[in-house]
Length: 110
Image (cartoon, rainbow, N blue to C red):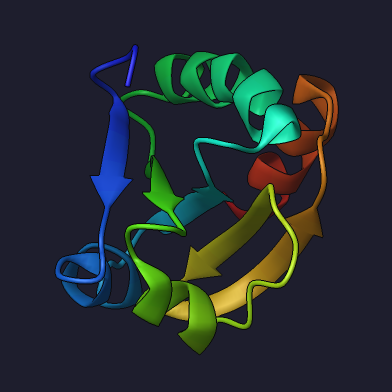
């Protein structure tokens, strides 16, 4: 990760870091081989920096390294972004999205 404010989610920490979190959590499901995922990376980094200190956690989960979580949340296409609030999925977005669109998604749930 290029930015310290972007969390790394794994099968091991997902439950505590995302599902049990009281704040909004945005999870970027990605893979190293995915071109659109790599293009989305700087946008996720920028959002994490921009929203630092607010009631949101922004992080990434590598679907190849954390297949149990990817399967549990039925991730079929990447990049996929799930937004959790109170442990529940409140929004999902699949595919490469511009920063402004992702900001609208985040702001709607803050």
